Amino acid sequence: MGANTPEAAMALYGEHINAHRFELVSPLIAEDAVFWFGDGSHVGLEAIGRAFEATWQALADETYWLEDLHWIARGDLAAACVYRFCWTATVGGAPARGSGRGTSVLGRGPQGWQIVHEHLSPSPA
Picture 1 (cartoon, rainbow, N blue to C red):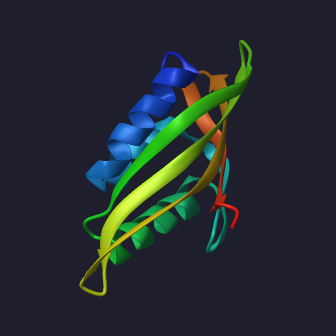
Picture 2 (picture 1 turned 120 degrees about the vertical axis):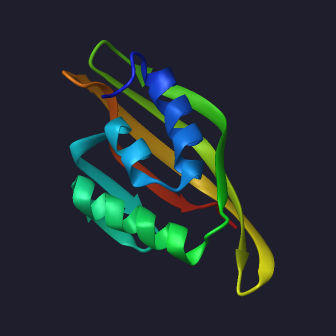
């Protein structure tokens, strides 16, 4: 089940993603969503789940969060926001951290508000 507002959906997404359990995140993502990550495009909930699982396996202790969330569009059936995403983890036994830019588009359907598209990219140099 999705959330009651797009803001609630993004807040839950940011909270649930750190449990590293896709079954907690998946209700916030539309079945036919399209996610664009640095490693490629992932279409549909199953492919998106595989991408999340691969990230969590590579960065087992990752902590992920969103900053500077700005709503650029908000309507009764669709909303879009941009933000800065940040993460910390251990990579190859050493502490690592990173950040980039994100865009999420949400739609409201029978399941509530869900992410229908996410695009994450590196911050500009």
